[in-house]
Length: 269
Length: 269
Image (cartoon, rainbow over the protein chains, first blue to last red):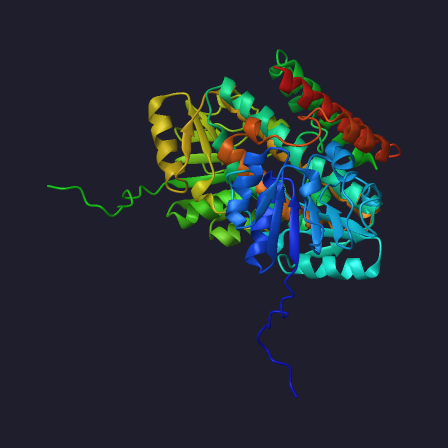
């Protein structure tokens, strides 16, 4: 018998899920999970009003007390600030559910005391309150302390994204550092650009076509081959002129020199 | 009488144009100008074969001798390396045509001796040999030494782009510096990200959804408000861990520290 050509969605196994946290990650992730057919059973937040807002959206229970957290859900997703994870989770003791956090740089071992099944579900995206996010293409990195847990996590992750990748903690941390360069640092460079333009009464959006093309090229031909500009050409004349232009802008000048130096070095390799 | 609601294209004035240079800018710009109805009459390149390739595309003459350049065209567009502009153009003497260069950081005055009508047509984009570029949304910055020249330049520029902006040399140079931050430096950060991922056997394209969202957010809400990450949160714990992770990667560590420092400073303002 021939395979069917059109795609079948895998029959969905619906899991019961508790969200620990009520920020942007909890909101966006919870929304995607509910839409995929899972049941959000409870939202915890230390601020009751925040838990309630999200719980209303998911039509589920909510609490601001750790010992009121339901203990018989299948999956607990911790979406709180990195440094709050140990203190919040150490007060939890699950019967058998799986507990995962969503942080890029926190060891999964931090959840060891909570349940015999633990892991990580790390979505590589920047979430804002107001902007909808489509999970379908967002990489979800998963990690678990045993294969049954990894399988369940994979099922849950694949129900919202086509880009589910198992990684160990070491790899995940390196993804997080790479993301800081590609997202946080890039955004800061855009801020510097905006400031330079503003001083000369030029609107920031003149840069948009250039940046869009820069990103496209980097992914099409790889950033090494795509590198252009005075630094990679070792064009001293332009570099000196740019440095003179930035003379009074200590911060921008400092970064201009640092990045130019780094590009020239990378060329010599 | 009511205005017509649908857009009329302004009736095109077709100009005769000589391209001085045969690189990516000459190719893409010439292609767009020809498509808009202008007549490319000649291509100059010191390397005859390069001039010929482009001339075949534009069905026009070509030469590798400066004194063979036709002197009765209306517009001469110089698309060569910044530091070659003075030496190439000083050998030219036009009867009355307009000469412009396309560089971000070169004074328009460098063309003063060539014609009484001179200026700049600076397209803010990164051009590659193989990748087609749509000029419609590319900002074209124009500058001229008199208003008749500026008007002609505006006509030519508006025939290929909806984003034509007159700027003086000072402003144009600041656009160029801003573009170095937003394009060249950003691309270098992507290279660092790719290297970090490669060392951990993770494909570069996992970063694409994150970067796309980062750029969209920066233009929607402004990069200051869009800034996220350990530096802006002053999250020492994560910063120290990242620095430890980059310990053996001198170049990445150097930039991590420089950019983190700069973000923390910008926050204190």
